Length: 288
Image 1 (cartoon, rainbow, N blue to C red):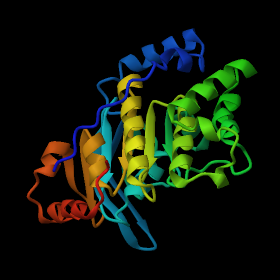
Image 2 (cartoon, helix red, strand yellow; image 1 turned 120 degrees about the horizontal axis):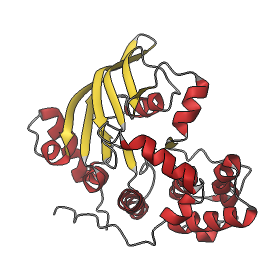
Image 3 (tube, one colour; image 1 turned 135 degrees about the vertical axis):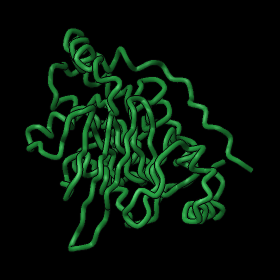
Image 4 (tube, rainbow, N blue to C red; image 1 turned 45 degrees about the horizontal axis):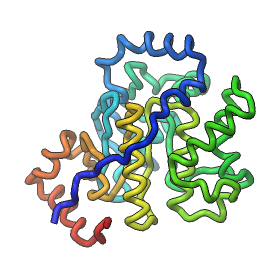
């Protein structure tokens, strides 16, 4: 039986609280500056290639994701899914091709230029990448304190709201080492939100979590899209998760983009590699 469409759970709008992270004038100016960019893809790859130790990981890959959409990158292990995210963040450089964030070429930027990009694009790593010596509360507060401009009461109110959003109220004072994998990822999402990004990159968010936690993370990604208009790129091997989230799909096979298009066209593809990949879903447990 096909999964029921994912319905985002209602939440109180976060816009007013997130606007506290920047002054009203600064926020409005930034929106005005980007108004002319709305027709540009949020993220665009053009003929990107990268190799490691002489082995091609990505070859001539092109795709894009529009503002406010969710792109799921699918494929077996080792086909360059996570590598794509790391190139967007500037942690890796392609051998050739172009990577643009809202029209700005990032492959030629230095570290200072990439710091500006990382204020608009953030990544939720597979391991959470939390600070081991800081509590959940302190981890989420970290980007708020780094940014500055907020007093302690404002920071605490925002931290409480963000932790509540991801359902981690009961572990606010816990250290990351005591958390399950799913909880670590949820806290990492709260910390990513505190940075007030426009694009969020998720690296295998459902790996090593049970179906219930996976479904909860899926709900949260959808809620961020519908409530705040976030643009998301989700790297996953989980086709059920992708069915719930994706507006568009990129399917990587042997380093190449075998498919890029709508979720509906992907599911209806008669390509034997895609059909074989989709058939693996039959071995997954139901999500509810």
